[in-house]
Image (cartoon, rainbow, N blue to C red):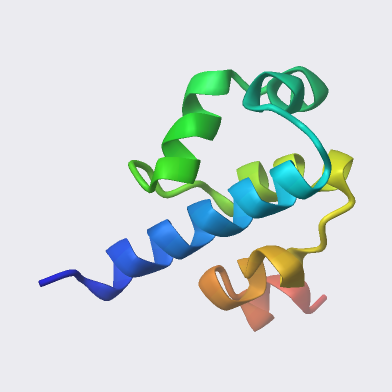
Length: 85
C-alpha cells in the first residue's frame, strides 16, 4: 500500500515534469537555468526524493511556474507564526 507522502511525491514529480516539458526544456536545460544538478531534478521527477520548498521555488522561477501550479502551498504550507512580524 502506498503512503500519502509517496503519492504526493509522485504527483509533485509529475507536475514538475509537465511544466518543464510545456516550456520545451530538458532536465539539462533546467539544470543549467537553475544551477541545480540534473541528478536531483531527475530524482524529484521520479519521486525518489522529496524536494524542499526552496528547491521547488528555485526550479519554478525560470519556468514562470507559480507555487500554486506546482502545488507547493499544499505540500509545504507556510507557518503563520514565521510570516507575522
